[in-house]
Image (tube, rainbow over all chains, first blue to last red; front, side, top):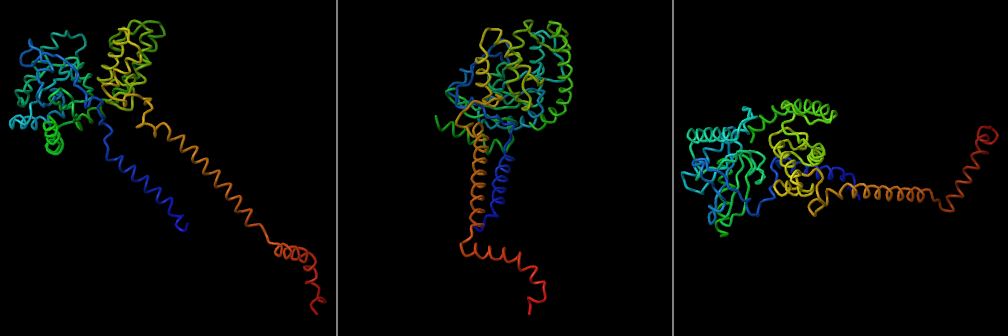
Length: 197
Length: 186
């Protein structure tokens, strides 16, 4: 073994390769255990007609996106124009899940606020935001307390779920949908899910 | 997400301070056997202290997805508060601790568990350190033994060498003073 002195160097390179690979991973992107599973059932009040409720089954037979958003979410502002363009081009139906519109806003103190008052405030704020920035959604639903968000494993806004015709979650995107993400990840995934039936 | 990041970062310092306050406040309240009723301390503390102890025990085992290096017991992130409420609600409804853990894992994955389950994908994590330890110790033992053998082999002299060494050693004793006497040179 003439090259024995190289062993530590090789070990170093192996370690460096592992650590270098680790740098390319984003620890904040936690893989969802819900991929490939049926989307959690829910019925929530609609933002446009709060007296009506939306249930998951209404989208059965369609490949669609469930986009988690809130007016207080800064990163949503970044992705919103992309969603609006997607809607204009009719790429895929997008349902908005308005997540904790009022109590999620750190700037507001909602302690002791009645649920009705909070709901009214949420509707008002969410509608104004969609008027100001454009409404890319087929419809939005109100997740006032974030319970449906928890069922979907939401831990940050925005998040986007790709749901297939049978109501199964096929992909989850964490963070804003940028034009690059749309082109390189989301559209190919949508195509794949559509082709799969 | 990056923008949220900054917000998160700024809030974390505040949260730590808030946590410390809550902890101090909660401790004294508990010592008196009273749930904290001041809304400035903990927003939703169950009246039932045994239940609250279970909630905290479970919460310490669950990772906060927002802060990632804090458990939902330690974190005051909104999601952590929501999850603590869920834990409390489900325990109060009579679900077992395992049910509650399964509930959270079904939504957020094994990542939320500070003690990950033993699976094929986590085998390296669980077995790795022991393998390294015993593998390293075994390798070291083997190396040391081999070195000992090598050293022993190096010092093994042939019969001729042994004889020569004996002569040299014996001769050195007698030859040294001799070489100094002038007569021996002639």
